[in-house]
Amino acid sequence: MVEIKPFRGYTYNPTRVQDISSVIAPPWDVVNSKDEESLRTLSEWNIIHIISGSADPLHSKSLFEKWIREDILVQDKEESFYFSRHHFKWLGKSFLRRGIFALLHIEDFSSGNIIPHEKIFEKYYTNRYKLIEKCRANFSPVFMLYDDETFLIEKIIDDSAVASVGRIGEKEYVDFGRIRGTEEISRIKSLLTPGKLIIADGHHRYQGALQYYKDNPDVKNGFILVFLVNIKSPQLLILPTHRYIPSGVSFIENKSAFEKDFDIERVPSADTMFARMQQSNGIKSFGIYEKGMFYIIRMRENFFSGWESLDTVILHNFIFAKILRTEGDGILYHQSTEYLLKEYRKTGRGVIFFLNPVEKKQFLEFCIDGHLMPQKTTYFYPKVPSGLVINRFDP
Image 1 (cartoon, rainbow, N blue to C red):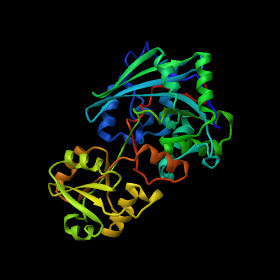
Image 2: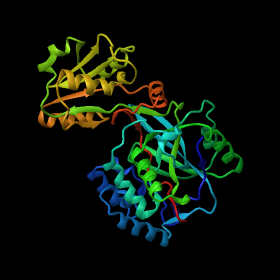
Image 3: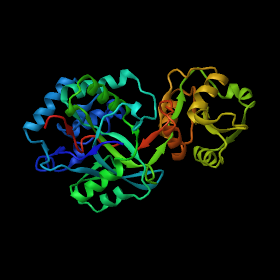
C-alpha cells in the first residue's frame, strides 16, 4: 500500500501573475541553455530562476522566500488534490493527458510499493538533494503511473473547474485546477492507496528526496510532490529516444557484419523507415541513417528473451558492443528525427540509430518483475511543467 494525500499547495497569485504561461517551465534537466535564457526573459518570477541546474541553492532559497513575502506565491487555505489537463500534439495528432498532483509518502524501493524503471546515478540526484535541503520544497513533481481500468480520476478531473490555463510554446497548453470535494478526495485515495506506483520520470528527484528524508527523518520531510497518470490512458505517450554516434563508427563499412544476423533494406525516407519499422510484427527492427541514406535492419532470429529483448539492450549490448565494437562514446540522445538529422548534417559523419517505442505491456511486465531499464529507454511525452503547484515542507 502507498500513502497519498491532498495538501495546501503554493501557486502563483492570480492578482500578481495574470497568465501562468510566463512563469511555468519544463523540468530543469530537459532545459538547454538557450531555452533557459528564453524562460528567464519571460518573467522575473519564472520558476526556472529557482530550479535551474546552474542556480545556487542558497540563491534559490532566497528567491523562493522573497516571492512568498511579496505574495507572488500564495498558499491555499484548504487541502486539495490538483489536476492538469495537458493538451499537446504529436505527429500531427492531438492528445489530452489528464493527471493529478498529490503528496506521496516517501518509501525505499525495497518496499516494493514504489517501482523505478531505470538506473539512477548519484551525481544527478545530488543536485536535487541540495535544492531540497536549502528550500525545503518540491518545485517539480515526480511523474508516476498508476493502473486503473475504470478511469475514475479522469472523470473527476473532467467534472472539476479550471482555475488557470498556461501555454507552453506554440503547440501545448495546460488547464490547471483543484479537487477539493470530500467525496472526490476520498474516492481518489481509496483507488490509489492499495496499488503500486511506477516512476515514469523524475527518478533523481525521487532519490534526492528519499536520501534527504533518510538523513533528516522528520515527518515533514517524508512526503514528495508527485504527478499521477493512468498507464491505461491511450493519451499517455511513451516515445523512443534515438541515438546518434557522431564519429568513430560506420554502418555502411560494416554491412557484411550486420548481414550475418539482419536483413537489410534501403528505404527512400524517414517516414517510410518508421512506417516499416512499426509494421515489423514482433520482428526486432531498427532504423539507420548514414551519408544521406535510410535503412531498416530486421533481426532474422530473435535469440534474446525477457529483459534482454528490449531494443535499447539489443542496440547497446549486441549491435554496438558485438558488431560495431564500440562503447558508443559521445552518443547524442534525442526523440526528434529532425533534430538528429540536422546535427548529422553539420559534419556528415557517424551513424544515427532509430528505435521503436517500448510497448506499455512490455514496460509494465519488466517494471513489475523488478528489471531496471537502461537510461534513455523511455521518454514520457510531454514532460510535466514545473511551477503549477509547489509543496513546501514548512508552511
